[in-house]
Image (cartoon, rainbow, N blue to C red):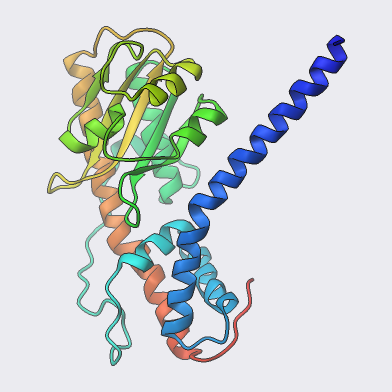
Length: 283
């Protein structure tokens, strides 16, 4: 086969692989969105599922909360009491926690995406690498799902889009609620063999995972740094700096979940009650 022919075949193979990755991503999210859509339709006597989706979309856009995030909380939150105009009438609000690592990240400050990007940037700067990802706990499925990443291959992100409770260093760190260092991916027993192969194929030879923890010590997410060389270990100063990032980020995420995300659900509830039985369309 000529060089041009091989290039064309390689391009077509990559296109097909990208298409498969996209289909898998849709398959991971679609059932959750559909379940939430059905709940909204039933709860507010809407004429069709499209109307349920439209209400979710309006709440998502107004409060800058991902539709997937909104759907995950919607299907797990207790049903609102029928007589109440508020979904969460006894909710207590608290001040937004301070994030010292955000001071150098002005664009989009305050949004969850901006906070997670800053968490990742700060962690990679401490560890000294340019590969890593942030995961959050998944309220609907359990485990962890990737929310931010940089320097990693599309195949890596696809493989680790959602991880369960074992077989990876991030799962171990979440279980132990403690930092976990993998000095050499090739030999560390924490990984399943498919996970090990996926990490090595992405060019990672070592990694370090840091739990994002609430004030009560609950793990709500994970940030992991990947290196293209074996890692001897981190210094005490590095570990302390990462603990600070993980603690601040975890407290902020808990605040965001019980404040901004619930505000979005409250807004959806108000729209649904006011337009009960009506038809809504996507914006």
